[in-house]
Amino acid sequence: MDIEKQAAAQRVTDEDVITRIMNGEKSAYELIMRKYNQRLFRIARSYITNEDEIEDVIQEAYIKAYEQMPRFEKRSSFSTWLIRIVINEALARVKQQKRFTSIAHDLPDDAESIQKVPIELQTQETPIGKLMNTELKDILEKAVDRLPDKYRSVFVMREVEGMSIAETSESLRITETNVKVRLNRAKEMLRETMSSFYHDVEVFHFDLVRCDRIVNNVLHRLGA
Image (cartoon, rainbow, N blue to C red; front, side):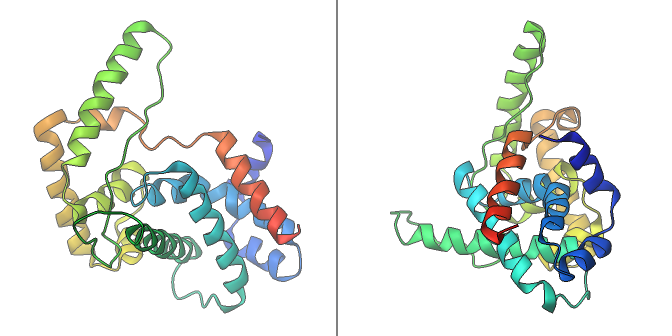
């Protein structure tokens, strides 16, 4: 992956990129995708377990965002608007899966319905590091899996992806007070199992190869 492109994507503002896209520069959409790929991947993974399907969800969301960009009213930030599209796309995919599975229970039809999420951790180079990473991964998986659905999405957005309270509130359409309460409760539950270790590892790892693949597929579909 072109590291310079990745760095450039972080420097430009969404408003500048949107203006360029609206003026016919389709290729500028790459800056948006490289800027938000990891965040959208992690959020989508809170709802869907199959990583190939997650990529499909993100790509479809990007296409829809591109097509709807002239109607973006700027009542919220562009990133929040994009997150809502990804969440809606993921939930639609969950509904579709329900029709072809024998799952007995029903998933809630809202932004808080979340499946069990396997967690990937970066592997340390040393044998001791690998062992600690494996053990910590197992603890973290079990702890996160035990979180009730309504707490897990808040935890992923705030602690894994580092979104602000306001962004999380707007993305999930719950009050900022609820965001704080649910995050605190999630932390309490996790602390019982693994204390504060989750602060020291990267969860929902998003690799650069996946980033390239998503960008190239979307640009190809847009004819850029």
